Image (cartoon, rainbow, N blue to C red; front, side, top):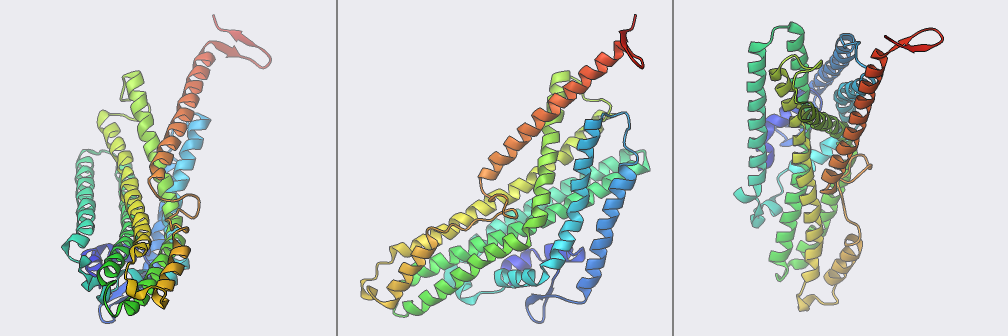
Length: 395
């Protein structure tokens, strides 16, 4: 197991326990494999996902405030559907792609002696994983403290149960995003190691042998990008939609508070409840924080690794098989940029931030317009007495 896998072994165990990850690490074989215990995890994941669906549609929706407008109800149902389907989507996706996920993890997280000894797998290379690991732990600690405080001050059991389901889904979502981050970052690290290997050994006598290794590993790790897009992006798309909805609500609430000067309204009975709600909504911004920079950096590293072969300047090997291999490699890879994508709908890079915020603004404008229309209709309804055939102004 690589240093990164050892550092994040508990992440793999947590994901495996609910079948968000359909494999387990075998300490004897030193690789990820499918075990019989994963079938139990699959059953647990299905039961948990079905429980979330039952809770959302038969408890939360049944207790929804019927005084709200049809538009507000429609928006609420859309949000509830997204939140309810993401867990079962993650479980089913893992079951469908379990073979490919096993191959993906073994390719990325297995020890690679030639690359790891190249000088780029020391403390500096593992440092980004350590920082991200600490960041996630701090995030979880903050969540636990907030939840403990809310539990002490909470009166209704229903509110406690609702918050428990929200917390569990948020933690699972964060863990899945962090798993995606680990896979993407390992691609970046392996590409960095390949680039160092090429540049450090291009003048050695056995360079042709190392070149074959370089080209073979480059093709293998490029293939893992496609595998990540195939195996992990379906639940990721739902989680990005979750983040979009929550951040849109976060922006809308701040607009409402600033424009009206009131925090408490029909949806919030206290300032504390409003602050807690804003905290949960803002926390979904961590989805973008973990995803976008890692995918952008990995894509750039792939391009830089391909470009490093342009500086091949050993004149002893001009017009040789090695030089021809490099030329073919450059022709094939320089014009085919490999990107991480969300089910092919869009590439995950820095443009996602612009896309998300433009979508939030659009969604925010729609919410504000419909809320204003509801207010106008309510005020108009107070001034008219509607009968079976005419509408007359009340005295």
